[in-house]
Amino acid sequence: MKKSVKLSIISSRKDDSAKPQMTELLTEGNYYVKDGIHYLTYDESKMTGMDGTTTTLKTDGRNVTLIRFGTTNSQFVFQKGRQHFGHYQTPYGNFSTCITPRDIDIMLDDTSGHIRLGYLIDFAGQSSENTFEIKYEIQA
Image (tube, rainbow, N blue to C red):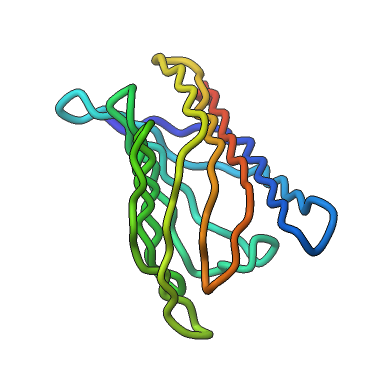
C-alpha cells in the first residue's frame, strides 16, 4: 500500500572547476514496499531543472536504483564495488554515464528512513564527486 511521505532531498556536486554545488528540495512523495523491494517516488521541480520528471528510488536494502522518466530519462545503479554504465536523456541531448559508488547507507522502516549515496560520475566527458541523500517521514 502506498503511503504519503514528506521528503528532504539534498544533493551536492563537486568537480575541478568550481566550489561544490548544493541543492536542497523539500517535497512530498510516496513510499511503498512490493515483493520485498522498497520504493520512494516524487516529482522533480523547476528548482532541480527537471520539471516534468518523476524520480523513483528502488532498493533491496543493499543496492539502489535511481530511475527518472519524463523530460529527463535515466537509470543509475548503485552497487558497492561495481561501476555501472548508462545513458542520460535530457532535452539538451543524450549523454553516456559511468557511476562508481563510494558509499551506500540505507535505513528504511514503516515510519521514516534515509538513503545516502556517495559516488563519482563521468557524464558527458566530465567527472564529478557527488552525494545524494533522501530522507522520508510517513505523513499521518
